[in-house]
Length: 296
Image 1 (cartoon, rainbow, N blue to C red):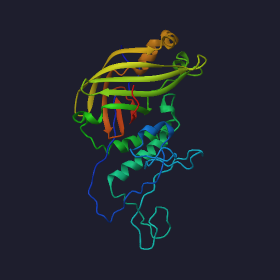
Image 2: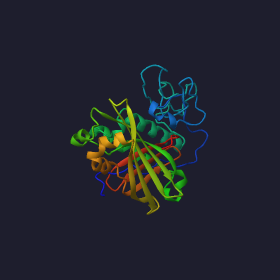
Image 3: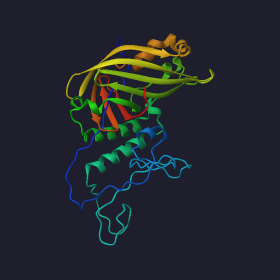
Image 4: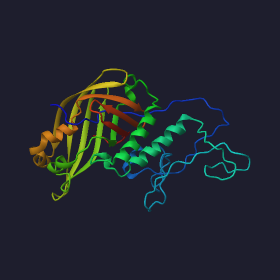
């Protein structure tokens, strides 16, 4: 079956290392927290109990207050007597020298998370200006890809991933026919990649109101094979909706639903690091995913 829109079967993120002298600036990592939807992405050793995660990407002000996402603070090369913090009026260098590519990539990621925050993964549309902003940040990350040959490093691709943002959309009559306006809510979009078997399992979770909050999922099994140093070809294998009550709700428009999420085609892995992936498919879609501990 030809897919009407693309899939989210693989993606990427990266860093280019470069030597720097000790006199150059170093990134300052504030105690911070990631958005609730991204808590599984926090680094090991994070302190969860008091609401603080030691993640340099985003900063949450107040454990119980409204979330305000800030850019990370960086140390700059300054004159004697200055505090050294960016924003200090006395003695700060005119231009920041981030010192390492790590700081550069980390800052771009922070901007990207801020840009996609509150967009519900982009599935129900994104204003054109916001979409352009996200595309610009994605291209910046792609230019810093630490894994230029991702299909030769599939260990970085394997495991479970959660969709953060994509350009796939469900709009207008499609959204109405699928009951996604008032009756059915979209949950997480997860993906489990089995490198040794050349398999990928995509899971789209749903919950239906009025039926004791019925929870269910669409599961799509696919196969992939390496096509180039950065591209994989993807074949659709099978799909199921569970439980039966949810299948009954989608039965009349099942082909429409599958057409949206069918992963068949090819996917270019344009960025991958230990925590994030970016991919672009043959239909022009972009996918941003973050590593997750949740199993499908």
